[in-house]
Length: 142
Image (cartoon, rainbow, N blue to C red; front, side, top):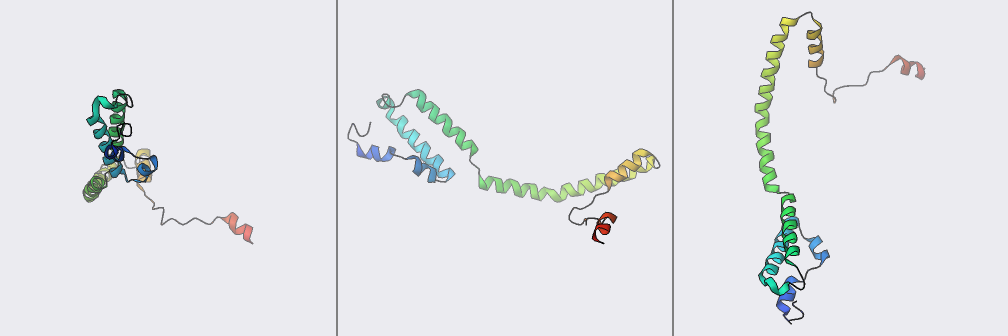
């Protein structure tokens, strides 16, 4: 449209290559796409031979979907901080629950249930475990 009407300013504003779009950061790309969309909507019916209203609407929908997928670093950092701040409180609550469970299990002492609970309650840190040497390995080495 811009070239046919010899409107170089509009041509420069709407001219965009796939490569230049791929090089933009996520948020910059979103801004650029919205700019292109708004300029095309501004032309209205003049662009009808080149771009249908359905295509414009589809373009808008795709931009909106893309915006939802863009990570928001600041928002994510705030969420992470909130979750990290709640961890000590959650750990205290877990300790309280474990203490209560340990107290309650004393009612079941001597039962299979109590033994299963104690076995499940034992926690082994994977970083502190050392592989056990078996007699087979010793026999193979000698």
